[in-house]
Image (cartoon, rainbow, N blue to C red; front, side):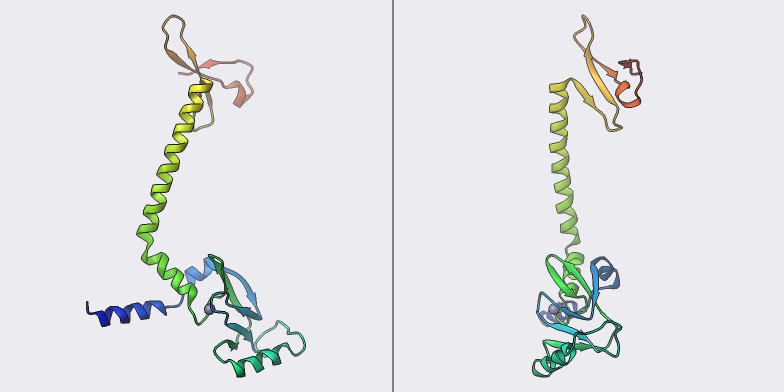
Length: 182
Ligand SMILES: [Zn+2]
């Protein structure tokens, strides 16, 4: 692929807005005025389109700011501004800087690495938990089972081997202690 074409595709992807599915997981609030914490653009609703109410002169002040800095203060002709949050970035989901679209692109493009990373982390955590379990069983002589039954290891007389005894009394409140497991 030519460098130019790669650059064009990158540029296009960079500006692809977040999908509705991604917005659904990010969405936190709706507001009459919202600032993007990433690029500091401020969006404000036209009062004719919104059911929210402005403080006195608030709208006029935003309008004035929009005339002075049209790329920073942006009037929106909708009822409210949907905002979301990810990685300490908070703001309008459709902000011009497209920060949320870029986060989505990153997650989608790098999903294989992310999945591998989580898989490796889980495997490590599992190994750690397995070692803790083995240590606990060795020290306590009690076998931990996944179905929450407590199994006690007892030494068979003379044989020197461990035998599993299920202690059902703790779970089921039975009177009989140490029922042998089949
Ligand atoms: Zn922004």
